Length: 623
Image (tube, rainbow, N blue to C red):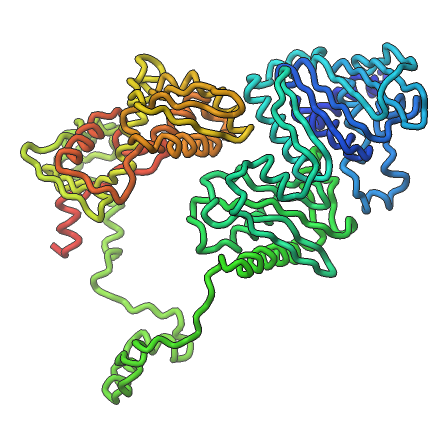
């Protein structure tokens, strides 16, 4: 038998490696920008065409490379960052594994121009499918100019899996922001399809945050700065009122490297405990500086997941730093140790305990279970236990079956009666209908009590309306457009760059749902009309909330773009708990709910109503 194991050719090995490192255009953007930072650049320009599918170009004014270094940089595992195994545990640079350029050259057509400041001529390289097509001297500015064209041109299956240009551009913007946020002392710019998207002048960290996240945070940032012998924590957190429904504006950097860590996020969230709503997330941009020997960054190809030697210490320091910052700026609630005078007037304080009271307490079963030896788990027996008839569940059913059940099997027993041993599925239940002349009742401005022939329903007004709107908009998105209410005075809305890209992607579908929104340039949009359910003057807040909710769904691949949008609009426009409803409004809402195809649950599976039947109510009262 001939030998069957053989070495892979370099180009195939590089393509396999590229599958881990270069998953989409944004992956290449991250690697090329990090290389520019490592080169000591003070200006980094990113140019993309067709969301990076046709062109990704990074221009920097760093130290550049010699001819030999330029050629070697495209070899696998070629790096200037590591010379021995000890270097792997004290890494302070962004790149170090030497796979990025080799991976990029395996799946794209690459042109590199680079020159060191002390050399007259630079080097020009053209590489395609890991093969060097051209290498010659050239005139170029000091630094490096690298172009990556036609990503995945030789792997068409991978190219077919790329998302729309708008979706891929959002990923590129995310990676750009993560690098630009970590290095505020460097100038960054991003140009997409000939239009400048970002122009970030070098400055302080606070200036960079405002440049990227918007000037709305100007007076809403709290400085965090804690220095210890083990690590330093610094950066900014947003005041509680800046908390959003999504995790969008949350950035953690360890030694200037962006990381994702649910554990450290929990530390920050805990520091905001009781200050933000449970379903909201605080904004933060936090940096952790510690000895590289205390962490391992080589656990994931994208280097966004790292391991700490002692993550509990890091957790404690981060939580304490954020709590301290909030307390310093009088944001965290303070404890009042002064005794309330009303407490002194309470009977438990003012009156002594009587002998009768002591005897009553000590003779109770609860007291005995906690004081007598070996009684901690004692449970008093009771004749009223509902479990005493548990054996009845195993007895065959001999009585007449309800008319809405169909039998699977039936046998005559010794008494001549038909004994049923199984049932098929229930027949389709008739649709719920409101009783004539029904008077509905609203409880706690949240629930609607609806009588039925067999008892009553407790309808949750917000979740019921969400189901009604979801089915209405689902029909609209696949058929007839929803009517829009024209605004007498159109309002303008200013969005961040990433939200602006998302808005442009959603505009056609939003128009179907009754939103008339037009781009006005420079990340500004004019709201000409909205669905009739939105109150005039609330348009801006409604659209901002809609975008936040859409981003909340963005990582859920089981939903299409239109499905996410319909769910978000239904959730955003549903009447909220706390709204007082008239008799007519309650009647219309309940009737529309009963007309739905799936009236009993919201789109995400929460119940819209609970049913209380008469026999259940009688059992509750012991009858």
